[in-house]
Length: 219
Image 1 (spheres, rainbow, N blue to C red):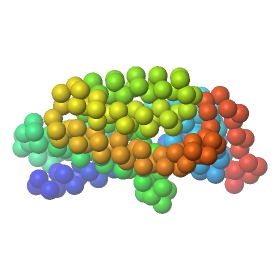
Image 2: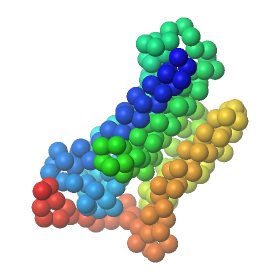
Image 3: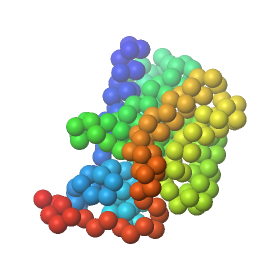
């Protein structure tokens, strides 16, 4: 039953995380978001191509995918499959499984041939549910770096790099520090194209001219 609960939690969280909200927002306007701008289905590209309302919706939905996966999915699965069976320590493991599964679902969504986003908003939702104090620190770092550089990618990479240190600073367990480090490494890895563009001086800044959708993008 333990294996069944773990697998069910991972599956539900993965499917929740795999909902390609950015792609769906683009399709709602007749645009394949993967073919314009940076080609990413995340909120940043949606902001740039579809505008603020769509970008805010995608950002919130992607964040909620991570938060709901950690805060609600494990309890729901346990109540359905093993009521009264899991200890508090066991529930923490389930929350970690759920969080990582949601991030992998967003980054490698089964609905788009396992090509998804960078996972920053979804990771933020996971961290907000798992380690709220570290989440606050990471958000502050993100805002400060974004304001100073006007690069969303630099802010995201910096916040990810700070996350394990923030987790340690708020006296979390070694297990949580390791999980934070894994999430940070995955987030930074997913920004490899942004890092290349930063080195080449071609990365988009906030306020840069929006890339217009190509003719027939919705076909």
